[in-house]
Image (cartoon, rainbow, N blue to C red; front, side):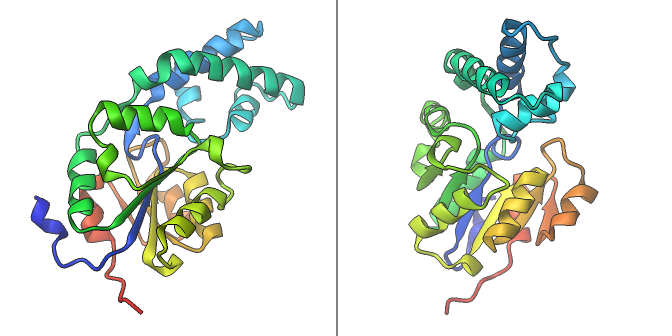
Length: 227
């Protein structure tokens, strides 16, 4: 299947992390409920927490509690991150197609970035653990931006570092915030259905294509002529 990447012009292919390259929902559930319980709040169902994956921690707290208190958001964030240092990397499980796709892209010498709300040190640790770091050129985690998705800041940083034009860049993600960030950045968006967002919702953000699995990515990316 590696031959499917032949004859591609070089591009910048940028990925969301959670529910796009990997499933780390178990860690998010542990961390969110640890923070809520420590704060004396009711814990939440796995399903409700999974729906918040990919959001900022402040927005995660708001959605889980309907509490807008900045003090409580700060407390939740601190507690979540403390627990994340203990458990998140061990809970990251890359999808079966991730290594094949990343390896195929790198064979074609594309520039590959990851832009995620997850902290860069956790992404890098998981990439090193599973031998995937050589395929990635840049990781822009949530700790490296002032504004997280749906702000385009992370994608814009990756574009600047890639030296590719925006019309030569595609962002692959599974969620509303991914689609909005790609739109705001002015890059092509490809939705993937390995997350919690249905096809009809992803179609609202003007994707080039919506795919069921990363292994379908080659067929979804149009040829971009060099200018």
